[in-house]
Amino acid sequence: MTTGGDAEGDDEGQTTAQVAELPPELLDIFKSLAENNQIVFKSQQIDDPELPFLEKQQLARESFEKNRENFLIRFGGYLSVRQLSSFQDLATREPIKSDESLEEMCLLLEDFKRKLSTRAVCIKNRRYRAMQQLLEKGEYFSEHEMMQRAPDLYQELVGQYLTEAEKKARDSYDVKNTSFSGILMHSLEKQQRDELLEESAKEHDDEASPSDPPPPDFEVPVACQKQWGGFDDEPVACSTSKSSQAVNVSKISKISTPEFYNPGERELLRNEFLSMMKERFLSGEDKDFDYSAVDDNAQLDDLKQIEQDEEDAYFEDSDDEEEMIEQAREEKEASSEDELDIYMRHLSNHHSLQN
Image (cartoon, rainbow, N blue to C red; front, side, top):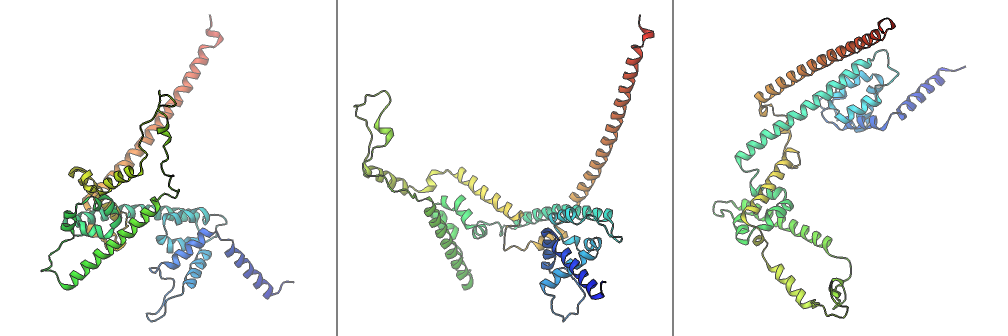
């Protein structure tokens, strides 16, 4: 006979087994929800301390185990496309409880995915609009500001091709009309930039330095040991002097890099740098920029473009529907013609019509 205590222990064992059997993708969803500070897991007073992370995670899991449909209604708006796909693959399975609807859960999942897709397009358009405004103002995408945000990229595409006079003009500023704090900040920024570039150059030199030991002195290259069409004992004109090679290298190293590039080529590199910085901004890679002020700013929406997009989407859906109807009609006609052809062929082969 099973006592009440034994039954309670069995229920707890089943609950523990159910939690343990949850896939890691679902546990990651509970963890992600617990990390989101915008979610209110239960009502609290203003002075109440914030719920611990593990308690939030447990509340999310309990909500899922109680009713998956209600869990999706409550937390679905905070899930990513990947998490929604994981939920659809792992959580919309049998057995379905009496107070759950599989059809409703599938509709909710599709609606959340559609909203995320629309949100992504909206954010992309808002960032592009904000970038246009920043370009008009000029400060954020000025050479100095972009150089501060990406000193390595700037040095690779622009900085190393500047002459000393151009570098001096770039780093100059109006000392008389600049405050002491401004002068100090300018000096600190330049010092940090120079140190960073020096470290990057040192790392690059370490990676580029050959690990193989240098060749022995006066070793004749294989290509110079024998010439095509010559005799085996014929002397070959090939310099093996180390001093001559050293002189040539020293001459090359003393040539100023900007002399190898004309103004047009340097302008192309500068434009490439600007394009890459624009792409970084649109992709959300500028760490010190407050993207929430752009992504959630409805004033950056182009209402005319939104209306045009909705109109295009409406007509596109209408065209798709008309194409499907037309295709179905053509298939039906083709099927009818095939049956008629079969009947006429069978009729023409009838013995009564044969001569």
